[in-house]
Image 1 (tube, rainbow, N blue to C red):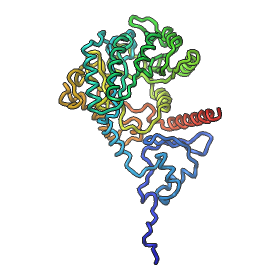
Image 2 (cartoon, rainbow, N blue to C red; image 1 turned 135 degrees about the vertical axis):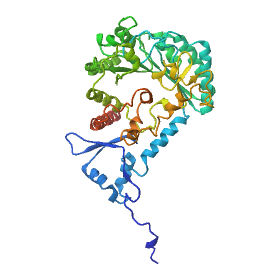
Image 3 (cartoon, rainbow, N blue to C red; image 1 turned 45 degrees about the vertical axis):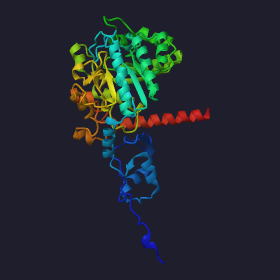
Length: 453
């Protein structure tokens, strides 16, 4: 009996629902016939031959079982689903997803430095015992309501090391709370590094700080021009001495706030940090970040010169290529109900750039209940408007943009209170793809070297 009628008829890849991803970027590889293709949704970058590029161009006509289909699909450069719709679901999920509770805590909004581009107006108070009690009680409610099994604390300010006693005592209570809830605990700190001593480092290690960010804006006088003490005293030598002399058991990310006055020292400062890491034995990692404008800095009247688009593109490519990842659906913790900033007065914020602005706080640590987040918020709109900047982004241009998996609409705070901030290298995708291709090649070489060693 002929059973040919029972066989599944052959279909083309197009008929089977396969299509080229809407989130691909490509660039010709210099001195080669090959192209690098990056898929922003899945977070891949690979090299493709002319034959593979041809097969990709005739994808609709290929048999759905052609062996190249599986390879393309694994790397995300083709898909059989609506990626934009998936991003929107990821964004909605980020708003309520409770895998982790994240708190940015400011034991003081005071600061010993007076940096011209700082986006904060600094106060001088410290967090009271009552506010600390409120934070512990709120953290308990958030862990229980979210059922999260991870608690992450970021110490911020102001300058948090002006209040090390609060960091230590409050950390001990939060660590104990996490242990009671069988949740993991991790912490980081953003500090100018001026007050860091071995005793401080040892304390931070005890309270489970696993990473720090310290800013160095250039070498010597270049740094001191923007990272100076209140009243104008220099800070470069002391910060560098602290990084060299202290034995630091956690990673320190050295941030370089790049502007017109120090862009010429990017390479020199990177080399300086690498040498400092070798001399000290500490894990120091350099990364550049663009200085952006802020209303507070403008009001202060001492804003630094911001970079033009071409310079911003080069710095942006360098930074983003170093932290390439899969599409995330959300920009930052501002899109999650379970991520908050808390100032020294107990005011709750959705963004650390707003942490000095009580007028856009949505509530207090004493009164807000995550079990009933909107009805217990003193200003519910200050909560909902941040959450509503998540995917689907309320901007048709963003919705159709190829960069959406990477930026997810950009910084919520800037979108709400100034203007949409696009990726600095938005109009230079080839530079980004080639930077990723070079980085991946370097990682392969490092892996090969490790295997040989």
